Length: 258
Image 1: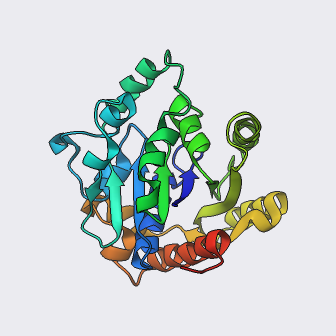
Image 2: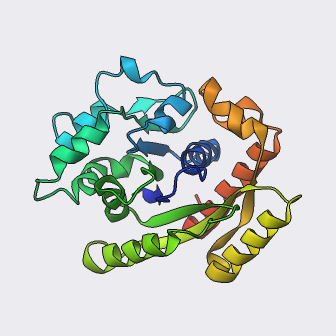
C-alpha cells in the first residue's frame, strides 16, 4: 500500500507545490511508483508538470464529486514512475458544493483507498489554507510534510496548523504523523535565514529535515518550462537539495528499503 504524504502549509509562497513536484520526481527516479494528487485549485502542480489544464477531459473536480473514477483521470507524466491526478481552478467551486455532504471530510480518503495498492508513494499538494480540501488531505494521509520559508514570520500560523493536525489525529485519523519540517528558500549568506533555521530546529528538533532547500534561480525557472528542477537542470543546487530530501523521506518512511 502507498505511503501517503500531504504537503501542507496554510501560508502561501513557502515552496509547497515546488516541494510536492520535486520530491515526487526524485522518489520516482528512485524507482518508486509515485502519484501526485493536486488538490490546490490553483493547479500549479498540474501545470508544473507540463500539463495544459484546458485540455483535461476530467480532473479532481469530477473525482471529488464522484462523477468519474480516479483511475480514468490519472495521467502518466513524461517521467518514468511518476503519475498525476490533475486539477483545474473549478475545484474551488467544487469545495463549496461538498460542504453539505455528510462524507465531505473523507472523500479523498475513499478516492485514495481505490488506488493506493498501485503506488509506493502518493504526494498530496494541498491549498495554502486550512480549507475542507486541506483537511481531506490530512485525513487521507500517513504523514504531513511542512515546508517553512526561512524568512520573517516563517512560523506564523504553524501552531494553528499543528493544532488542526492534532484534532484530525484525535477525531478521524490516528495514524497521522508529522514527517518533518522542511526549511525552504534558505540563503546561508544572510543572518536572517540562519536565525530562522535555528529557530525551526529549536522548535521541531529531530522533526526538522537535515536537508535545506536553497533560494535558487533554477528552482524558480523550472515550472515555467513544465518540468521538475531535476529535469530542467540536474546539476543545480536546487536539484541536488531535492534529491537529498527524497532520500531523507525514504529513510523516514521506509528505512531506505524498497
